[in-house]
Length: 201
Image (cartoon, rainbow, N blue to C red; front, side, top):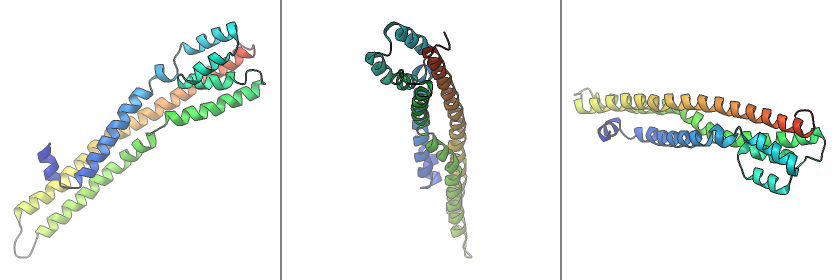
């Protein structure tokens, strides 16, 4: 690996930095976007059962507010349980927007890495081509400089693609996962509102 880095020249370090950031974001999002962590299936039945027994107690609202994102959305609705259906839905929608923003955290950065990594590889390619042409003189051509320039050009192009392709795959996967979680949270919140207002059992 060190031999490849040395052969690729200094432009490779920008791609290595991008790859480290991409791996960190991918790892963090894989952990944070788990359905069981964001919108556990058993949460709505538990909340409904406790609400029917004790009402919208301060203890229930506080516990939900410190729990998963879906719990925070439920807590926003339960704080307005004495208000009209419209007010309750507005509170839930506001909490839902905040939850959606949190779910999308770092995704723009991952998308940016996916887009710029090939450009960083292209930048390394240009640097390599400059080195190749600088080695070509009317008197003679230095084979070692030519070889180094070719290495810089090819390794940077390849490494840029190696970083960009998985980054784009995970970016699209996480976007789909976020959309799915947001829709699931909306459906669960609507069910809660309907149960509280007696439209659903």
